[in-house]
Image (cartoon, rainbow over all chains, first blue to last red; front, side, top):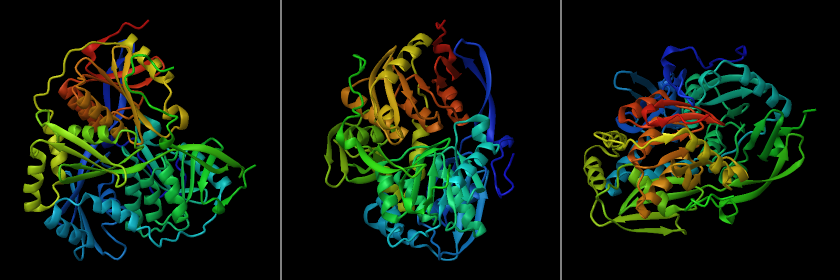
Length: 272
Length: 272
């Protein structure tokens, strides 16, 4: 049953997203199963080729926009004038009204030392300077409700497995649920949707199936969402960054159990 | 118990690899746990900065070498003259006797259009042209033995979770077992170890905890290992590439059950 609060949800029946294959099981007997599709998608920012992402291919425009936003390449004050997806060449171009700072930086770096791959990483950390996340409370009872709602929602994960999911939630209600081969692409798709729809993160919770690594924590903070929740575990650096930026981080969430390693002050321990 | 065949195994007790943290559980009670460390490591090929990888930091030299080898940037005929790791600046430089084709390509691409990020992806696929993997048989009984051996080996996964592992195996015996935050870094570390030690892949099996995506399949084939095994699932493109290069791919391996979606001709169905 799809929660009525969900504005966008996975479509496990969509023909383009899975494929039927035949193989053999451990006894050598034929077995049929469905597996998730995976396709390359090259993302451009204006004239610059940025990256080739592997994706199930359901929301290329939001994936591209969200990737660029989350990498700090498209900023809040950049005006996005269009997003053009060309399925034939598996490419998507995000266009802005004016050349972005990132493109200018690439041009300078290229003239001096070639691909400035360190720039992106440094930029992501810089983007956290002075970041203040709101004190939006997080009720344990809401976490239980949203977990249950997500687990009841039809998804590629429930249908075929081998996929990551992320869900933007408001209190106990799932709002936007995305899946992809990579946990980061799923979150980037959500970020693109939020930017395109003008949906903010200040009063929301971000649920992910992926581990709470430095990059996932940075992404959640960049998206302005004060609470990050996962059924998976943590890395030490993810915890450090979360504490540094004041993000509430909850992991190892299984059934009613979880561990909160940062931002405990937001949590309302209202579970029985 | 560490299998006697293992030449390198995880060290879950190593102080640098995990950290004790304190948080709160679902009732608000204090809880102590250990989480895996995650540190940036910038990899250079001679004078070129290539990428910043996130790693637990146990084998930076092998991670760097294996990354470059698996990306096709350091080829079989390149002579590696040294690998210098500087812990203070979290950087590792892999040096070759002569400038590599990859560096030459980057120099050309930089002069024309900036970062040629598409090059790496295209190179990886090109590297598969004409690849022939040996017919080394894969016994189901050996798969069972190696799964059991791996699951009995002390590891960061068993100790703290939130980590991926990979193991190179010969028949039923684990030979080299690596773990890291990312499944690809774990496999790259193994590739670096194999290159450094002169261990070939032709008579081996590659076990991974990660999903069998296009990139994982390409990596295994690039490493010359004819069989790839995982407890996780598949993507359609991973299956396509495996069939294209004649790689045996077994996934969803749990207990005695599994699914083989490619290279069934290598498998000897000798399980009861």
